[in-house]
Image (cartoon, rainbow, N blue to C red; front, side, top):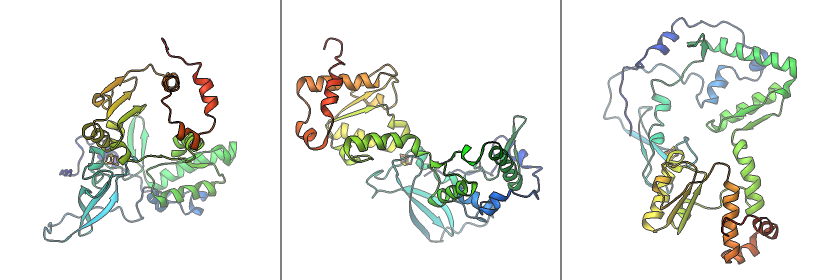
Length: 328
Ligand code: SF4
């Protein structure tokens, strides 16, 4: 659990000084935002905050005897989805613990997960619209921010039509935030709204669904711990998905698995490898085809699996035959 105690001021007072001189607002928001019901309340909801939920905390005597409620939740910092137990005392999120019963994190958190409470309590959390003026961030009012954004959007729409804008949502949005974001795009007049995961997962879903018949992951962390050989190619879980690394390490240590890391960089994950293979950037496909060349050459493929679940393998064989590795 991370506890940070301070008087609420950042070391440098640039933000605090920027907050001074805040415009009182009074400017009208543009019609489309008002009609969509997506004013300050809507934008606050995009961040998972209800209107009126942001207010100054009043300092008072701590009641150490007050009961602590434990609420189960999920860390949103990466796709591992570790369980977070939030400890709430008199309505205040006072602490957090990783969940032991979660099969994913099994009583652990990485540094990112250990600091999720900072999203709410961090004294450097962004609470107001900020505008970069002359190289300095200045606090502006919600009305001004909404008006400026709306003015620019309206100018774009006037010049190029509603379909000229693509509304891309964030993976960090709550369901409610995503719903409102979609509504905003619809009120704007376009269906060009999507989730950022489309950028990575439209390709994987198409590829994996066509290959395995299912457009998502086909294995679990338990599979990782029980594998005899683990190959990480193009990934760096030690930094991107830190808690997942424990499953790789567990497989390596307790199951005596080989951990092969293929990467141009000697990453923190590569540091744990039993075999690190440095490749040149852009040679992923030749490496995979070269591996397959050896598999087919030696008859190591799982023929029954291919018979039951894979189609087009003859075409793959023909292509792989052209990729004989040096000396092959
Ligand atoms: S690995 Fe870290 S960042 Fe990812 S879900 Fe778990 S605690 Fe959060």
